[in-house]
Length: 606
Image (cartoon, rainbow, N blue to C red; front, top):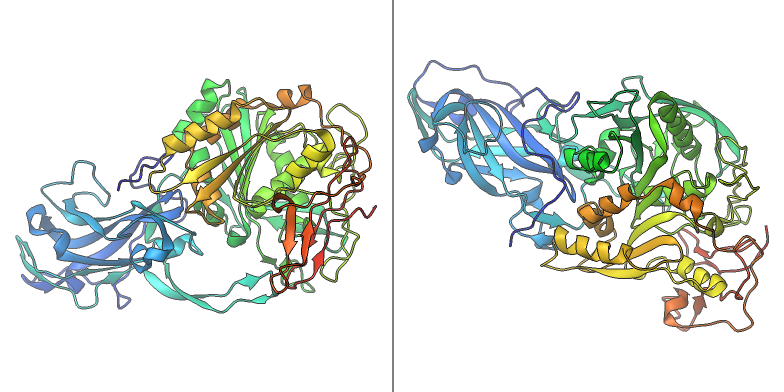
């Protein structure tokens, strides 16, 4: 089965910022010198190794390994059987895959006169042996780091005849990695998870194509963005700190031009101060910087699109008293950390620095990132021309002063600068009435089946509006073309709002929505077709009034919010609202993290 891939930048050796240019050490940690002797073992004849990668739909992926020899190698002397490769793909089991098979195994071996892949199959002889590996597979989740996917061990297992003698099989082989112990935080328990052991590629021993246009602003380099006076809803305090980020500016940028802006925010699985993680955990960043996306933007009247990808760490060294400050955004009671206003400050600097079309600013995000851009959309009315959230909880109205998981949180003040206190027409507004504020927005929402039905129930019960939705079926026959056809059909349907929902079904996981969503070109076609003007011309749903429960509550499976696993008869349903009432003072229901207790959907006033 051949899996077709879209939005993948052209293959080739691309030196990525500070991560390219070097070669690996020997397996035993030293590089051997070329020998004048005729016959050598491969451990001596191979002088270095480089891993070549790209960003696939399911994250960074190894596509080839290049061995550098101390002499010219005839291409006729090497075949697929000459080498063995152990890489991230070969460690995967059938249960790890949603499509394809034989991940990471050798597909081609040839010689080249340059340390890169060749579409023509290389040269007759050369010092570089290129070993291409299978990338025609899809995983159910991305790995912890791009450094894991770029790690490889190569052994020459058969003799190789050269003009200077025979190179005998290797004993140790050549690798480019060191062992690494990864310990992550579990928000469900508030404790660290069990340690995980991985091989991490050493910086300088690999390249990842398609990302060379991004500029990294990091804590290590000292060029991260310094944010001031940022309010944190978890503790009600203001904080100053440095926000790392990656930014892509088109090579042909000119101050007299007119450029779109995409804000893309990663999920909680990649919370780290390294911006490379958000560039490689999904295909989003590579796609937005691709020639295809940029050319499409030009066809739609822009001179290009600037892409901004902040990096939010799980724990941040705020100061001596807070060496591990939690920056997690869009927590399960919808409190936003001080990272959210920091992103706003960064966005404001970017729009001041570059020639940005204020009608063509877009928000994109997955899981926590999707939750965050959705929450931000209510903080600045019609600021975003369109949103592309994937596999995330839909925003809701939550009284943050109500105790959640034993803690009381705070609503960020609407200061008129970071958070607007007036809507796009100049009328006073309350960003906490989220369901009302975003009801005129352009949103294409991709999620998996059974998630996040609350907003659709409220819009139906209170305003008589049904949100268009279609199933996006993922099976062994799925292709970008088929998925795009479904998206085009969905967004062409009549709609009283600008909101559309695609529900992924079939062989899916939580991450499937952004794996396949960013591998569906029609999602980007829709995004670039939206402008802020269409939102301004559209009326919001009449929900800026108090919520009133209906006299008769509907209880069916479509409205089931919670069912106790130990006591299946204990069920809680989303409340049915009275027609023509609003969402003001509506308090959404949530499950307390790390416990079986449930804060039932209610009508507690702020």
